[in-house]
Length: 188
Image (tube, rainbow, N blue to C red; front, side):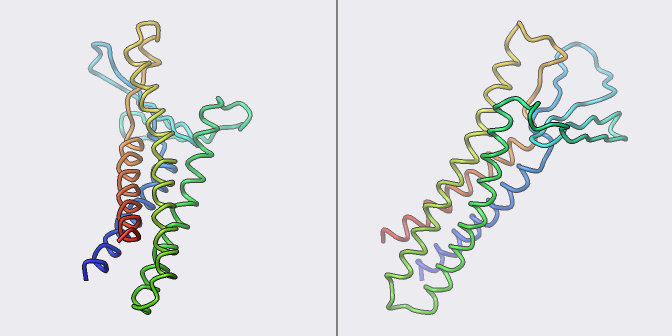
């Protein structure tokens, strides 16, 4: 019974982590404009994401523009795009492997060899996906904090941590937890 509960829990954690990975990849709020001066009245805020930049004017009007050229992007942004796209694909694959593992376990109670292969593959894939999500999200967060406290960076170019980074950290934690649950299940 505990085995079934752990499988379902891992499936739920992995599914929510998969949705979070997709959301963090698509969200434009990776870097958000910071207001470090004494100006209280702010007319526009700038969001920078993996795929587009957005400008919100007075919270009423939102204009977004996709990046024009892939060749004009900085190399870290290209790498982060690639890592997040691979993470989305791998999260879907690991979720499907987990579904097959759970379904196969419930159908055959005595055949543990086939179950262990699917469960182990799902666990390793979830762990790898969580790591792939953590790399660009943490790297971006670190560079934002470093630039924010750097006195050489002008105030209009300083950014704050956006909502997509928090979604990415949360989904990475869920994916790592799902992977740990399935690897623990396989070890038992």
